[in-house]
Length: 319
Image (cartoon, rainbow, N blue to C red):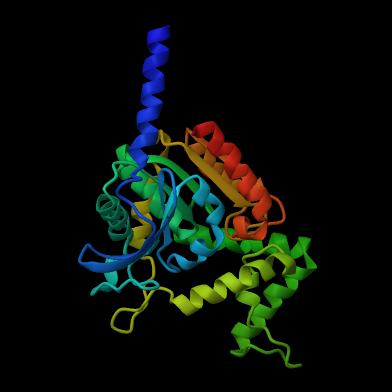
């Protein structure tokens, strides 16, 4: 029994140390050629390596809002290709999920570490999960937020509409947000007939209420200033049917994934309603789901105290 305990202790210690590279990774801002593209990233904090970015909005939003994690992790905030201070690829198709997944692995190698933790928000959660399926030996844990188990493109549109209608019936504030967004779209304007500014409606749709939107708004502004994903030859990138079908095949492998996963979603995420977050949790055998009340798509920004408390509880059990 004592021998087995010693072996277990040594194994856990090895896993933790394999994430850490205190002597090689110094805080600062860096530019590296990754897959032939100049990629910008920032290192802050101490502990196991956690990589976070986003294929459309880059790193700035996470740099501004994930500082509490820097007490537990060496955070590597990176601008994915074409976002922020990173260069765009030469071909539009080089924004596809295979390229983005490989980008993470090449960044891991540049950092000189064998294992990484990943934080994936929204579209990046799919990239993080694909990476974990394809490189399980290199992942020690995932934190996912603003995510769910997804269907095909038609199902995604229907789910979003159903969720929107449900929230409209529950919240007068949200009903007004949808009406404002619809008015903007139909009339191609950002002001209503009385001159009221409607330009925030598309962003408000992702949040719980006016109070939580006020927390998210300055972050969205900084993301816009830093630069979202750049077009290539005047064309913007959109997911194709073929790429969606490939990801649906990857989802079928989730039940074989032994990586420890925390899913921490806003209870009122219109794009990822709780039922589908629960379905994702059921398909990940070593996962835990936490729903944060009075939060939408950005729980760690809308309700930071509750969200980081839950993250720390989970981390303390894992680490």
